[in-house]
Image (cartoon, rainbow, N blue to C red; front, side):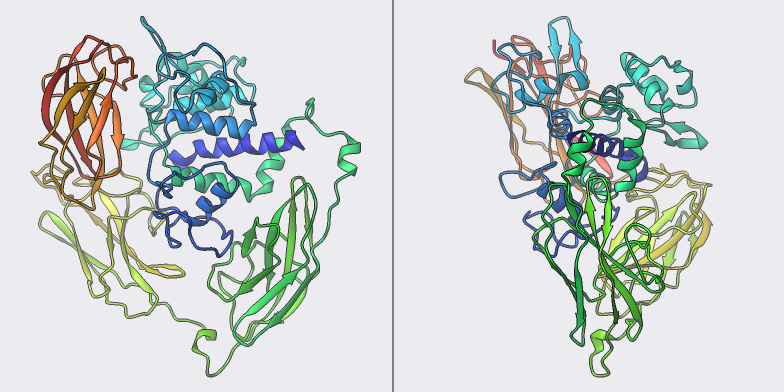
Length: 594
């Protein structure tokens, strides 16, 4: 079964690539794994990717950090991508005596992973040697190379004319255009809408750890995609023999169920099989023999020792024939499908009526109010209004805008504001705040028509309101935010200590819009800033106050040869990045010790 697992993970990586096109940080995860409490201090149970993160951690595909955090909004670095490739392809770790890359030596934490996955990765060749830049963010063109090689397409002959439709094709690294062209031709990767009706490939875009977890979890929970990939491979030395297949025991779950007056509890006997992967809890209103995937699912449970589940309308159903929630007093058919590596086996069916109790408010259907939205142009801005919603499960309102979708909603179309004051009933759209996600960038274009709405976010569902179409008014002001939401680092100091440069600064005041610090270095520019002058490090913790710089480190961008040269004098600065502005700090000048 090693081959099938190999191919399943390859598909996982393909979907990770698609993240830049089909997912955002507001995407909901696909299925609950369990009801256990979160084990990461920065991932609460109501985080949009909670279940996916838990699943990836459980499978040891994407691990957390030693301080009990997952850092879901962190970009995936090139070193981290190397570890994912090793885990995904189940490559035995290599530990060569000589390092391939000058900036990933034997004492680097990712040395073995980078050396092991070297064939699938990209490097940076300079006159001084080969560099990997492990701290740089993994980008789409790097992933194109990895996937094309992993799928065995690197010897294909594909003309680069397939890239002619991408307005940003010149941003693709010259030596990688062959791989990007193959990835596009083979439909492994695609493009997305750019500005003014163009199409872009976005070769330098990155993905967050939460986004990677969300898409990896979709593949783990969707066997149909894996089956399609396996059908394309008809000959492999890793394909199991018929004798090996015959040794696998496919057991159907033995399901029982009961109602305790408030909820339904299903139980089944545990399954012991080397090919077993998990359970899908399935419900149907009309099909007397429901099974996954034909009838959708409520839960996907990967804990093989778990043999019971509670059905209480706390989770939305996926792809069923009765909507997202069960109705009190209605009869349903319940079953459990066992998921094996290469097939699905449905268990017996239990018929039960979802309970209703006259004196039990929790068992009665809950009414969820839909926002009634109005909007109007007010000078150089647009004012959106809606009615106040009084509901015990209401968490807040998301103000949503789309350029192309005439029925925008959160999370599919991103959001401008997240309003937790339930009594607030209006919002001003004036281009002073950057948009999160969406199909038009961070700011609205004057003279362009958009669709405006408000989504009410409840504890267990999201209800979009009606839509109002308006043209954003033209103004002489810059359509991007003119004011900063925070402050810049103005206290940067540095010294040479123990053969290294130690940079120190005072953290900026706390701001909800803080994204990260960028450590910026320039050889020629006495006022270096990000992104024009590249960066050495980025730090997402606002309390970070120190960075170490050593000769030989790889540098991203900038006006020098991709690495920090000993004996060379540089200008150093910190750019504080907020979600609506980038603020450079003071500059110091130091010489990197030899």
